[in-house]
Image (cartoon, rainbow, N blue to C red):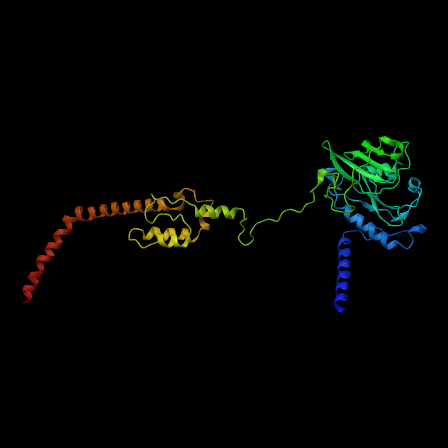
Length: 377
């Protein structure tokens, strides 16, 4: 029994936290009722507020009508907040609750003297379900259902889209028919009324699940989001950069392959540049040799510090002359030749040119030494 109470309490807390999470980005005044409600809506203020916040947050995932406008924005709510309105009751012959928004990026301009009017609408006191009016459908409703046309009713779905002959087409269903507008433009709006069209009436395509994923496709190929903008708000893929080395993971396999598959030039003499990076190869390549002691010390620095090569843009196929293998030997040879030539010249000067002068005093000194010994005896 205690376990059952614990599970129930956990579920309630989880639900409360979830509601708090999705309501965090919704203004606190959305769905707040002002004025006296019609009798059918009285006592349902909490449900109305919850449904208004849910619709508001869900709509923020959608794109605005114009590409340059980015995400859809309602704008500012009027001081009336969620209220009873008689002006839309004329369309439905029943009570309607409405919260107006002004100054957003809805394409319904100058509707009811608002700037880009959008609205949250509820006309069903049984379910208190809330729908969104924006763009061409909002303007159509604000103008009384179009020129010489009345009585379209309140929306029973949100607007949805599908591609038809390569053109995005907007749909929204109402109590007395449905609205269709190619590219979502107000001047392409058509309202299809089954009573007026009779046998020529065509049923609208089926919308996706209410307040479901905005890119979910219905059986009739419809999505809540305009197909042209699906994926516009998808999160960017995380970077694969390794923060410890600053090297992206894409470049690492390439560098490893280039090192392991690096061709070894057999023409390089002993003590030349070590082109492999394995520990075994670097040890074997640095074996003691009388003629290669200096080059081995030089190449061991290269093998023990591979970053000295990779940081300068050198790969396995780079010219080996850049690593110092041939240049070091050539430089050592030239230096040795210079030393030999300079030493030979010095010896030639010292022993040949000055040999005669240096030899005479030496012989004199050697001849005098026996005499000194004799005198001593």
